[in-house]
Length: 179
Figure 1 (tube, rainbow, N blue to C red):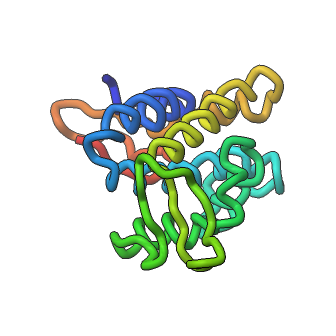
Figure 2 (tube, rainbow, N blue to C red):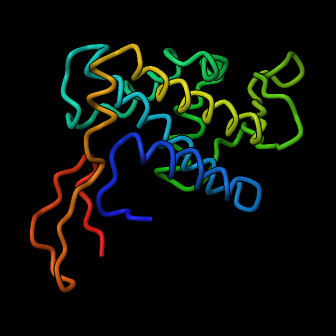
């Protein structure tokens, strides 16, 4: 796969859907981290439409994440259990889950009940399937929204390399160098 010149649409299809899907059963911990970052990416993708701010505007992680949770029907059920704080922040910043969150691939996702009101269970298979559906919904939005079509067609990263030397700095959404 040519990772050097990939559009946002290709990134969503090949990385967020396919590659995360390939590791979800074998590496559920990594899948959780990647999905939580991917949800934020989905929110960033629709940001110019939701509030007019720029694609590369920084320091909007929580807003972007919550925007995706609210926009995509498959993710809305996670609003009440605050997976931004419990998964995205804890996994991505500290590499641990919330002490009151249980990750399980067989249980139903739910908030705390009367016996243990703070405990949250997240079904990892459901989390990936719901995230995948949100990705697919976003890709389908390009047919109805010129703004989304434009964003999805833009480069995720674009790097020119010759003889192992980077000739042009990356123009990207992530400011990354690929060797």
